[in-house]
Amino acid sequence: MKNTPFTEKHIALGARMAEFAGYNMPISYTGINDEHFAVRNSVGVFDVSHMGEFILKGENALDLIQRTTSNDASKLTDGQAQYSCLPNNENGIVDDLIVYCIEKDKVYMLVVNASNIEKDWNWLQQFNDKHVEMHNISDETALLAIQGPDACKILQGLTPVDLQLMKYYTFQKSTFAGVDNVLISATGYTGSGGVEIYFEDKGDNAEKIWNAIFEAGKEAGIKPCGLGARDTLRLEMGYCLYGNDIDDTTSTLEAGLGWITKLKKTTPFTQQEKLIAQKEAGITRKLISFEMIDRGIPRHGYKITDAAGKEIGVVTSGTQSPTLGRAIGLGYVAIDHSALDTEIFINIRDKNIKAKIVKAPFV
Image (tube, rainbow, N blue to C red):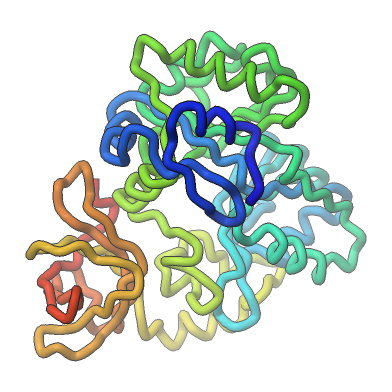
């Protein structure tokens, strides 16, 4: 397993560690619920240095992004970021990602999922017929997500950037905790606000930044958080997780990601014609959000049925929501069973347990 710059910190703090996407990652420290509420109510810190980062440079950098992503990156100006997808050739998704515009038309950073770094790199390379300069800086880049309603206030003394005035999905490069060239991004996957900070993993940068963050947040009860809480937080917001809710077999339209699928984009992109045809014909299944009515925890892969016991879909993500105190989930169902308030059943240990389709986010 690979380590991040913070692996020894996690172990020293008593984190429960496990393999994730080839990395030795913290799952929890004091408990998933404890860490979940720290982020919802105040501030928590996630080590997400396992994520992948690619730099694309040159006069054709934007063209490569436009031809391979579903969103319209031409709308981005310096300091703006955008959620997007890499569609494949079969009405599926290679990966979801964030596109950062560092210098319009010339320099971009793509942030991809850890498990898909090699896959995404190879996918982009096969379309790079106009000699865009590509650099995979994943192994040299550290990334911390400081999330929660108090995050920006707590971190303000560590940087000259006015964190509380930063708009969602914008970023700035500046100094942070005495470290130069840190990219500070008003992004995150928890729905509780905060920032993500990218910096070069060299010298004592990681040590300085980690220590400064926890010293600044000491009085607010800042907590290190693991991937367990990251999952419950994103699921309460109804955010998709690659490999669970979206993958090579799910289209952006089926996954409710039509808002990042710009079918009228002037630069044709991978799968555009198939997605247009799918939209015109109508999707046959849809990703829905549901809450359990009866007791039971839905898990990835569990069957979804109607009242007669007929299979109509499958659960893609599920958990016990710490905030709501009841179980929630995401899953694909046949389109004629996808209306809000529809009663569905989750097959748990050979029993069909009642649930109801609701609108995301859950909180």
